[in-house]
Amino acid sequence: MLKIAWHPCYMHPLPVGHRFPMIKYELLPQQLIHYGIVSKNNFFEPKPLQEKWIIKTHQKAYWEKLKFLNLSKKEERRTGFPLSKALVEREITIAQGTIDCAEFALKYGASMNIAGGTHHAFTNLGEGFCLLNDIAIAANYLLAKKIAKQILVVDLDVHQGNGTAEIFKTNKKVFTFSMHGAKNFPVKKERSDLDVPLPDNTADEIYLNLLNTHIKNLLKKVQPDFIFFQSGVDVLKEDKLGRLALSLEGCKQRDEIVIESAFKNKIPLVVVMGGGYAEDIKLILQAHTNTFKVVQDVMF
Image 1: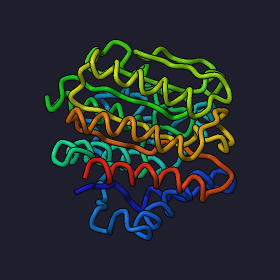
Image 2: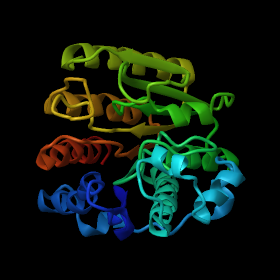
Image 3: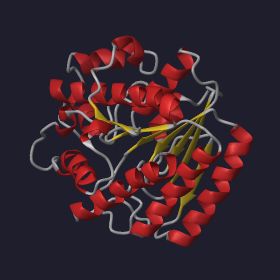
Image 4: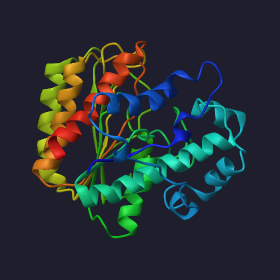
């Protein structure tokens, strides 16, 4: 059974000007059920994450700043969100959701978190709508529990997974692969184990050929026993923060390459949603819905 992490706190209310990115977390579960892709039984509500798992990835001093709402104004601006207790609770619940998804993926083959993909969070700071790095926390959880030995992070959000790259820069047990817009945020890129920076307006054919080649090579080179897939849909041509030019169908084919590769090689897979900022919320929802449908069709 496909298990999907979702919690009411994913819809954490924000001041006007910050709300748009949050709307999809309310609407996406409804759309998935409406189209018959999943039922209510597929969803589970994660609990807040235990502190011991946070500080295996993030510096304790940084976590305490978050916990006690003591970020400086500069640090707060860097996250893009006004800091609040509810926002911190949202972040730790998302991170626990990704850990739970990892456990479900080991049991069923794949699992998905409707939120997650907070790949701009570093060991010691937040950035770009990310306070805690859920993929990194879940990867470190698997390694600490000795459930996985070699993890591959496939980050296909339009923005480089700079926080994930920084966290695992000296850890050979996690291979970070980021395929992203070369001229997009963040201005200062970190060094992933493999970065594939793409020029503005890269469209379906070039993108998909590159991805297909790299995924095949990485599975041979890295030989992962677990994959995290950051499936941000801000690669779409219509995305206002994107600068790439994938079509809706191209984005779906992107998902198929990653998901089918995990399935054929019998590698447990966790998919987290990442970004999506097109003006038309229906387009964002359709792109994310496609990702869920591909997982359901291929893995189950």
